[in-house]
Amino acid sequence: MRVLSYALMTISDAFPVLVNRLSRVAHALQFSHGLNPAQWEALRYLEKANRYSASPSAMADYLGATKGTVSQTLIALESKGLVRRDRCPNDRRAIVLALTDAGREILTQDPLCQIYAATEKVPKAEREQLAEVMKSILDDLCVRNNSSQFGVCGDCCHLDDGDCAGSGTCGVTGDPLEASDLKRICIDFSPCSDDEVSLSK
Ligand code: SF4
Image (cartoon, rainbow, N blue to C red; front, side):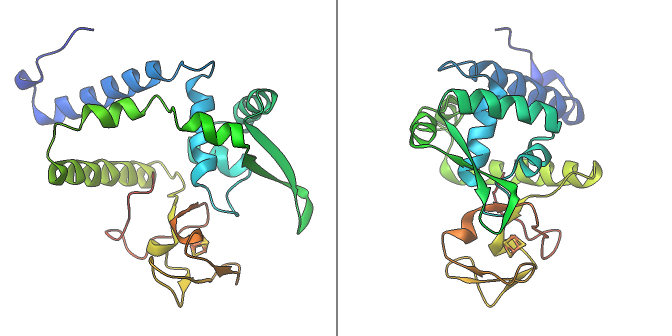
């Protein structure tokens, strides 16, 4: 792999080039364990999505993919025994997606862990700062491109009577939320304010 001299670039040139290069490296890493990058992304999404977001259409929204592409990805993952489709108990026409045990197991070997491993020589405080900057860039791009801003309950203006450490109620559905729900990403998320977001993507 050729390494460009980023020191010779302006910061406005270097950022897009570095993000693009990292994205290509991350893409290439994910042809592993018999899966492709879209299939790995779908598995990761289902591991994080809450009960309102475990649908093919929410997944398409989060991944910025068409429903047709997501459908093909899900067919492949189902045939490998990594994902299952259930009927929603409250609406028999709706589909709820879930990881199987095999799906959860293969995620323990996620090839993107190599990216985290590559950051381990960077001090923790700088890594956290870098993650905040990357999250901020992603949020900004979502807003500019009218993409849904998925996030977690603790940062959502619809969370009633709760905080990110305990439980609460969803102001959209009226459903009670357990502590484990509060850490999951949601398609109905709406940020409390532009600067109150968490590392959820
Ligand atoms: S509080 Fe917000 S993020 Fe949580 S379930 Fe309700 S809409 Fe989704």
